Image 1: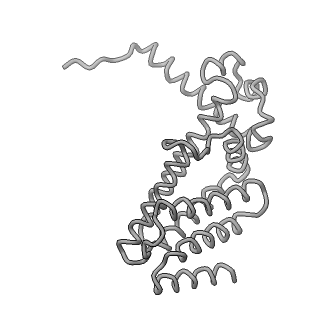
Image 2: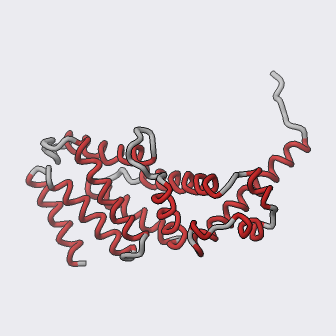
Image 3: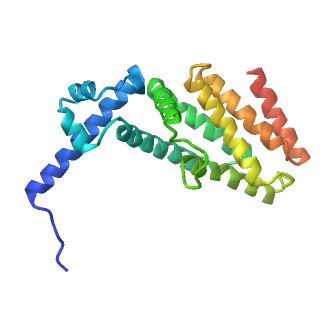
Length: 222
């Protein structure tokens, strides 16, 4: 069967368009990190990317479209981190997730702070949709609670559909407070994990509860 190939000229144009789009997003990330999303101006972005304003609109669109692409990339990064943190005990898995996320945020704190604030303000992290960002991320703690019940770590008196969102909410609140500059990443780890462990302890079997309380004690004294 013959394989269809693009003409050389069209292939080059496609690659050049992709490079320009990536340059636009790269400079947009820099401007968001240094000035915040509200201060992002398409004219300033065009100057930094060495492109015209119409080119940016033709290749991507306006500020809302740029933010959407940046948040989509951010969400993909977070999903990848969370999907890898599944080994070990229940509390070890959650601890690894929080620590890995904090380490990732530390690679470019200014950008991640600004991106989360912009995403929250624009409604990209809304909780009403069954298919939105929140709905996708809350599935992991729900599944973790279901597994913990099967392992006789949780009693099942609190439904995973109730407990899971509360666990995710502990991370979300800590992340929002960090993004808004109320505390640093060290405190983000402590606040998020303390909240997660307290939620799990509310439905834990005695031995598991003791393990969780021990972890909470270590966090409070660190």
